Length: 541
Ligand code: NAP
Image (cartoon, rainbow, N blue to C red):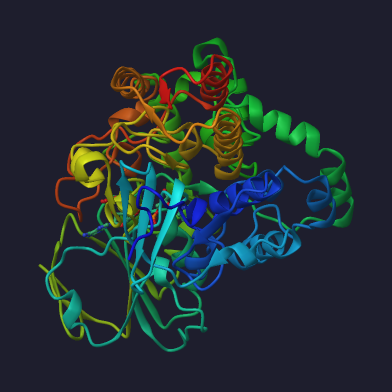
């Protein structure tokens, strides 16, 4: 039963779907305003990505002190990150701490799987249907459903027939998994696989990695934060966040403004050695600005990294297999690793190149390639996600006239500012496709999006508006602009989840314009202008 008929008010002013990094902060901001809001979360606790991804070795590649929320000085002062790059358990503890500190869980409903959400044109309200049969209504619907929250299994015959233990990394169990004495397979070599492989290599009997395309990985150089550094970090939060505001990716690392050709060779090599030896993403996004733009320059740095891999992997044939040949360094998301390449120097770790011997099927006992059958006690699927739009496709969103969002976005997302899409009024897509926040150090980007959306709600309340929707012209212009940003760097040319590819999802075998590549400062400027000019491009009524 829905109560969103003409003469009834919705049950809530706002429903937020998702209690991850975005949902938590959006809830906090709305409660400050006294908004009646509820959060619907599929998990049995908050944390989103950090709730689900419990696989061994899971940690972020952002400096911890750039990943926490910036909105509360008290929170910043009291929270001590223990490592420069915190692991999943610590990050989940942090998010739970935020929820407890600000008493947010009273407004969260857990174990709530949203099945569908439909916009009612008569009432300007959303009706949300839950898997448990309940129906909730709200004026505004915020989606905070994550960008890497729709995991994909490989579409290989026989997956269901396998009799051993099998996990997708996203659904890693809460209970400890015992690796001792086991023969384990890892399928995939993305950022997730790179972490888990390095972490379990010395804990399993045998580890066999099935690789289709290698990635260019670089060392994370994680370390504990000592007391003195902790004090320094806390004293410099203002500068840290200001630095993140200025860089394209919202990290403390920003491009070196020098061009490759302007720097003498010995100085250049010294700089590259320094980048390779430094913690975090500097090696990717703190490089000469033309490394990710000019193919020839990129090829030079790619050679430098290939040599690093050759030096770290003892067996030359294995080293060559681990060196990508189909794309240059940094043109896909660079996995940061801790002794990943050294794992292949262990006698119990084996690499199967699926280009030489493709998988034919998963069998009850293991994996059958064109070469032989490998028996396993455990198969770990580190096969990634139907990124960004996948989480939207898994909920049936219906807009004006019953239009399905998954139909509208079948060839790729179409949005205005990555925050709304025509035909779906009153639905704000936090961390949605084509938004600036998804291509950044996530919390930094998401704080911008949430703050903007909160100001929008304040504006709507002040003017008694009950409906907001972008104009088709604004949407066309933004979507064309997003497309254009794919020409800004070499990342736009390479097959990856950034460019919308996923071999396990039908139709996702072509370029889709998923993210805004214009950088955080430009995105922020655009959002600010839109708001200051009375929400240009939106129809409010
Ligand atoms: P991913 O980068 O998409 O990697 C998936 C891997 O599975 C790829 O190696 C892919 O091979 C392989 N694969 C998929 N289907 C396959 C099939 N049918 N047969 C053989 N191989 C198959 O996914 P991910 O590693 O989970 O990472 C996704 C993103 O999550 C990262 O890029 C990152 O943004 C985020 N992440 C962040 C961290 C961190 O902050 N440290 C850690 C983990 C993940 P192909 O390349 O050939 O498709």
